[in-house]
Each structure stands twice: as C-alpha cells, then as structure tokens.
Image (cartoon, rainbow, N blue to C red; front, side):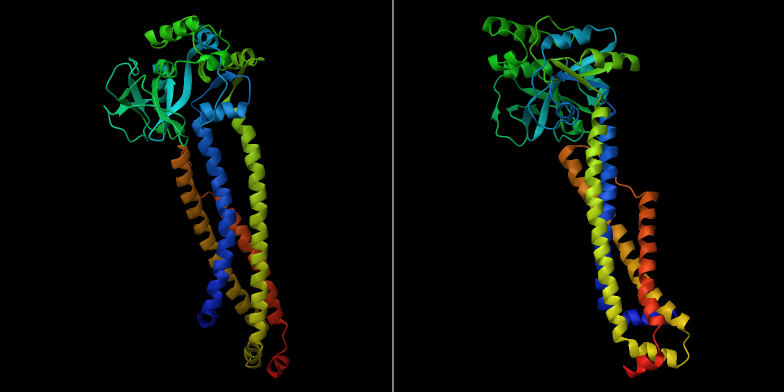
Length: 414
C-alpha cells in the first residue's frame, strides 16, 4: 500500500506540493503567533525583573514603565527634585536612582543616572573606580559599539528625532555594562548632573518640576547639583523624569508604593503594569489566533475540495482496483493515508516555518528594542500541531469514505 501511495504522489507531485504549501502557510501563521506572543511575555518580564519600584510624576503608569524601564522615547512630566532627595534619605530605600532622558548619540539614548544604579546593572569592564565618578564619564551598554576613550558629544533629542549637538558637555567612555538582555544594553549612561548641566533646565522644565520661576534660584540649584556627583542630594534639585527605587524589603516596597501614589506622584511595580499589558496582548493573540484558525479552516476546505475532485477523476482507477479484488478497506486506507501524508507534511513544514518566522521577527524586535526575546518550541506547540493532525485525519476520512462506498461497476461505466 505504501508503494502505491508514494507512486500516486509522484504522479501528482505538483498538486501535492501545492497542498503542502497551503497547509504549511496556514499552520505557520498560527504557530508564529503562539511562539512570538510567549517570547514577548518572557522577554519583557525578564527585562522588568531588575526594577523593583519606579516613581514618577502623576500620569500614565504604562508610559512611565515604558519610558523608564524599556527606554521607549516619550516625554514625561518632570518629578519634583525634592522627591528624589527624600527617597535617597529614606531608611527603607537601598538606593534611589534618578533617570534623565532627552539626549542621544549615534542613535543610542543617553540616560543620566547614578553610580549606584550602574553598579546594580553590573559592569563588565571599567577604567575608573567607582563608575561615573566625574562629570565627563560615560558607561555604555553591552550592545553599544563604542570603545573606551571614545568621545561622546550628546545630541539634544531622542533617537529617531531631529537633534542638535550640545556644546555644554563632552563625555568619554570609561566602562561597559555586562549584558543584561534589556534595552539598557543599547543605552549610554552618564551622571545625572551632566544631563542637568547640558539642559540647564529652562523655566518651562522648572515649572513642571514645581520650582519657582526665579532665574537666580534656578541657576544656583543646577550649579550646586553639578558640583557634586550622586547622593546625598542638596535640598534644591532640578526635576527628573523618573526614579528607580531599590527597597530594602518587600514590605518596604509596598509601603513606598502606597506613600508615593498621590495627586502629584506615581509609584508602580513594573511587573504589575506588564500584567495589564499582557491582558491586552492576550486579546490581540486571541484575535490573531482566530484569524489563523480561520485560515486553517479555509485551507482544510480547499484540500477537501481538491481531494474530492481528484477522486472524481480517479473513479475508473478505483473501480479497476475493486474489480481486481482489492477490498474496500484497502481502498479506504490508500486514499486516507495519501491525504494524511500530504497534510502531515504540510503541518510539519508549517511548524518549522512558524518557528523560523518567529525567530526572524524576534531578532528584528530585539535589535530595535534591546529586549532579548527567547524563541522556543515547547510541548504545547507540538500539542497544537498534534491537534491539527488529528483534525486533518478526521477530514481525510471523508474522501476515503467516498472512495470506500463507490461501486466498482458504476465506477467502470463512468
């Protein structure tokens, strides 16, 4: 029977290849959706694991996390600098690191922060001890292609936007972060005081931070902040877009989140925000999965129609087999095995194509966002393929039953 099936497939190779490609395309779509959605969940969750608590000005929780944790370019309302000082002095806080955005260099975002935060990310190499000990130092992420000693002239503006060069400050690369598989691998980290100095905090930014409009008062705060690096912070600080907080205990984390969820401040756990984003992502996955299932149903209907048309053309051949003594079960088995072999090959190719497509998409997204997306085939994916095969086996039985019930005499007369 196997030789008969293979011989028939060779005879109708073109039609078999078309069916395989049709099934493979439909299967690949569903498989790619499953794999990529899981990779996005795992990759973003791992990226957020390093950030316990984020504090910013009152506004959108999602935007605060996307900007401060995932470094997505978007303007944030400045948080009063007094909040940074109070958090740094709070005994429940291991460290409170400001993050300042707004500049870039060669497409890499420049982020102002502190040495404590840099050390928490992990250093692979350094030329100074401790990092960011002077105003002109820069630590680059593992994915930034700048060598030690490279001179960085920050451009005012986020990556992808029109920018003009700052003349106020120049940085030199003095170290490199260890790989983190997060967007911070593509960031350039500099002292927050350097960002304050480069921007000089005009009246508008100071108003957003809740300071006076007095120019003398503003200049004094900026100069005092730039004269020393890192905490303890002076009483008068420029505003910051966000603060990364490392609480000492879990209980401290919940206490701080409750205290800083006010009319003017917002404190969030990145993991909780991601959970809400995942629900939206899950809705999108359901829609894409429904589209994939619809595509597979159309492919199955097309295969069924092609199979029935193919059997109608082979009625005389099937009738001759029956006339020469081939039992009905054998005819059923040949037709069913042939269709199942073609569909099974299509499903197998679809699994491989879906995995490859998800891998290629993940590489592109990782390069763009800096988040490592783990693309893997799991048992649930193989179970999904097994369900498709089971459905295909049931569908393939319909043409086989049609061939089984044909009368040899009627088939030969047609």
